[in-house]
Image (tube, rainbow, N blue to C red):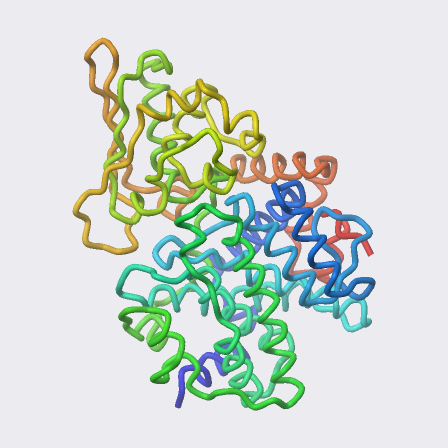
Length: 455
């Protein structure tokens, strides 16, 4: 029995009653997080450019776009734009061990499905949507966990498309053979290169957007009767053989108890996740020792190789926002000057600020000898001061991870900040209330009216 058939069976069999309380709470929490981050993404750099391109693919049909009243696009195109907006500011949640951002793809696709179904008078219930979300995250994260070597392709896109397919199988209740074919077409469409990350280009969120759009197309093809490859995941030319250097099927064939959605981490800052440990360590030392930017001679963040690879780059006066979000030296300079990093920090003026660039020159990331290719911790930040003192803080868990989750107050503050950035701040309390009772909604698409995606 192929892995695609096994995963199709699981997606079809999963029900809300099977999901434990921890995973249920996580599903609602990260749906809330994703919706607000996506609405804020309507104001992200280049988001208008992406919408302009997408409108050429057709408009005036079923689905809305977060933070953009009056915009109506075909389902796959709406999924594309929403997925770009969710990841464009590096503020969306992440499964750290898998190195996968599952909600940017899975969350986008299930929302587009609910919106389309509602427009066709066949609404998706809140319970069904949350169940599909859990099923989709399970597949995307488990594919990432199956890799035993460092990522060489952009896994949020390459694994994300298969998570989307699992979620749509759950929502559309596809026959097993059609589900298997949908996974087969996901393989045909799967793509995502790390070169965009190396260059700090906005192709990263575009790759996530493409995965969401292609997942809808893959399922549509299978539902229309197009037979797809059977062994799309575990075959000799399947996903794992092509996209990962080495793998172990255990996370997929014999998963641990519980659900992967409960292993997902918040992003408390709109930056690459790999920068968050260094940001919090610097905030801690500033609070504990009264450090100011003028006190700093040098800062070194010694961290696992993945951290150095992802956010150890150097800043420049002409860098784009996508580069800066992945540059811990520049982000550290922002923290030294104002205590945190937020959505409004990535303007052209801020990026070229000579004071920030001079501060960033005193900050560097150094790789340690951690053998785990997906490790984010432990890591140690050392500050050398101009008067000869040394201060250190070791990060053993990143803020927002299951080991150090955000408090309810921190979670709500993040969502309110995102909605304020999108011009939707007045809806924050009503949206939070609807999320709390989301599984009782007869039409999951009703929530979109609070996020600027009006019909």
